Length: 286
Figure 1: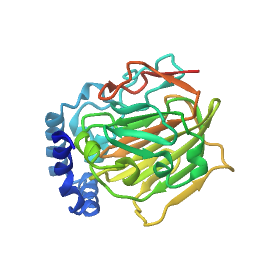
Figure 2: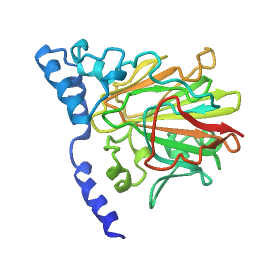
Figure 3: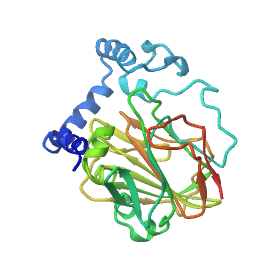
């Protein structure tokens, strides 16, 4: 094992023992607090600490938010994220963790770490098998980023699966240091049908992520239950256009997208660590 790999493993050891769920519950309560003395202090501090560009926000003034959650999931002003003329666009602002071909059923997490599509989607082999040898992209949303999630292409919702799990951090060090991270953390798996076939958007939680919400369901978690939960939408028509909001993170995390074989061709400059913006060209249809 290389020295850098060993350092990453050592750096994440405390996360195996600290109370992930308790910390996350407390963070959620604090972020939802409407105590004015707290809100007036924490939002300006956060903007300065992480370099948040408030000029892009629909409400650029830090005093315009009732709680930290409202600020964190802030809307952007009209025109801040124009959609590229592309078959598939980036669904979020963030950075590429990894992207490229799915090798059989294996996704690259980081050097030396892979995980399966079956594990990511909560154990459904039939669902996972639709993406064998397909394409994937994993995108990390940092604290400074815009935290609403949008559609990469037109899609009709088919299923939603809440998979309980750990709440490890998803920062780059943890991604390198925790094997199977995105298939171990709590996640909400959204399955869509499109004109080019099925695709998956997995919204992965993390330490301090108070909740994950979708536009059709509202808050998915809490509650945080021990068993996998699933919703099917065969008797409903929930269709979203490219660029429409589909969900949001309260104290953000990661989106993993799966596409079938021979559906798209990712841009050649979409490589690990590259910054991306919602609405930019992500891929062309094959």
